Amino acid sequence: MAEEKNMVEFESCMKRQKDNDNEENGKDPYGNGISSVIPGWFSEISPMWPGEAHSLKIEKILFQGKSEYQKVMVFQSSTYGKVLVLDGVIQLTERDECAYQEMITHLPLCSIANPKKVLVIGGGDGGVLREVSRHSSIEKIDICEIDNMVVEVSKQYFPEVAVGFNDPRVTLRIGDGVAFLKAAAEGTYDAVIVDSSDPIGPAQELFEKPFFQSVARALRPGGVMCTQAESIWLHMDIIEDIVSNCRQIFNGSVNYAWTTVPTYPSGMIGFMLCSTEGPTVDFKHPVNPIDEKESQKSVRPLKFYNSEIHTAAFCLPSFAKRKISSKEN
Image (cartoon, rainbow, N blue to C red; front, side, top):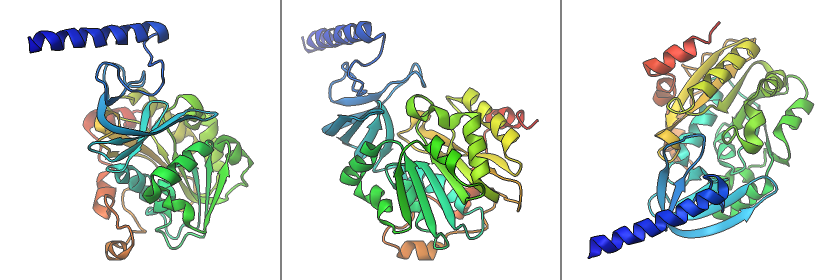
């Protein structure tokens, strides 16, 4: 009897899901990524990774809102702490955010000596700022984030991430990062870090050739860029386009690196690292290491990044290495 009851309940849930699919052509009509098939769970469903979904059990929804640009949600999960979701896609969780924030920041900044001026595009949760602040040589940190709601929600629900906004070297500008870069003076920055969401919606321009041209122009000779560059398991076509564009624009080093983030699609995420013509940059062998002993003395010791994992991040599986190498010419 129990099995029969469960089957009836499942079929009823599936009917509700089918009705929702018919209304929205397969999209969640509420735009919050919560599956109606398994109540109490968040399921990350997107055309960016068709045929699969990663689910987290929800203990409590803490915030739901809609900004001018996107839907914003925060929930308490049972295994990964608080979770920030934008347009149905996980941006960070308290448990594994370190693997992304530390790597996207220290891969570029540990590859050049004495960085002084850094620009962050996106990154409204403040995590990249928190990591940039570890570098004592830095004098100025600009951040351009398009969505003020992301900043305010992060400050309220993720204070250990958003602590980066408290650094006096930080100047926050709410606005379009593409327009900000176009207006920046040539050769302003030692490093530009692009902490973007996937190339749909407000982040789409951050993956296109004109944007990379603006980044290169804003960097000093031998300056570096690091941008979120998707998953080798899901988005090899997007990665190939990014590599091809960057090899045409940046006349220094161009490398792809990656890290593991359990709550991101396929469990990993990549980074495109490029340098402008000038002093040679060898991304694979950091010249500006963060001293581990000093890091352990800080209020928040590094959880993920170290010099060994920096070098290892550039080791690619054979299939990805062949694809990326084919774009060299």
